[in-house]
Image (tube, rainbow, N blue to C red):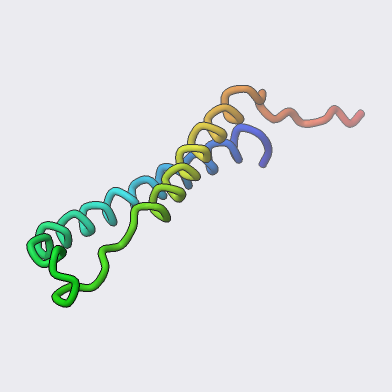
Amino acid sequence: MRGPVWGIVTAGIGVLMIGLLVAWGTAYGTWLDEIGPFIDDPGAAPEAPTIILPGLVGLLAVALVVGGAVIAVTTGPEREPRGR
């Protein structure tokens, strides 16, 4: 397994990460909708999570998708060596 196969696998991992981030973001948005009125009161709700870590994971996922696609497109098909 060389070039194109690893590129497609890498891009697939990136797409999976993006899908998981979307699912997490949906849950996070729902949590903010439910707890939103209490955020102004410091004693009523825990601190809201930050977007820094999901943002970094999202950037990594985009890099995996782009890098994997570039590798898959730019490398040629595997060829068997001629052993005569």
